Length: 163
Image (tube, rainbow, N blue to C red; front, top):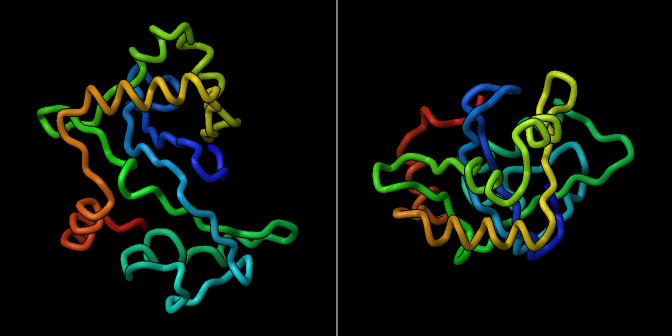
């Protein structure tokens, strides 16, 4: 995962971790903006960084539970025109594992690269591979849910809230 403006982050989920056989793309996130918090461990709901009540509930209210002592906390905002959730014609997330394997990565290499003890960690793609994956998803996705649509879905479905 990268926090550099204009980089592409792919949020993914596997069918089973760590021995997944499918790797679904939950979100293609092109970083448009990086904003540092005034206080690393708390942010007020009225801060201009926070767009909606749902965003606060899902991404900000928990910060005090994971205090930073040396680092600054920041928020990344996605490019609303080029970030999206890719889905197939059946409204299902797209499995990117076959694409990654066609590009020369191996399943053991990907599994190992995404594992940190019993947890997962970001798997770094070089810029060329990330751009190719972005282009492939852009072409392959029959449905692309962009930020405004995802925001509306989240607002209308409170049961989707992060716990």
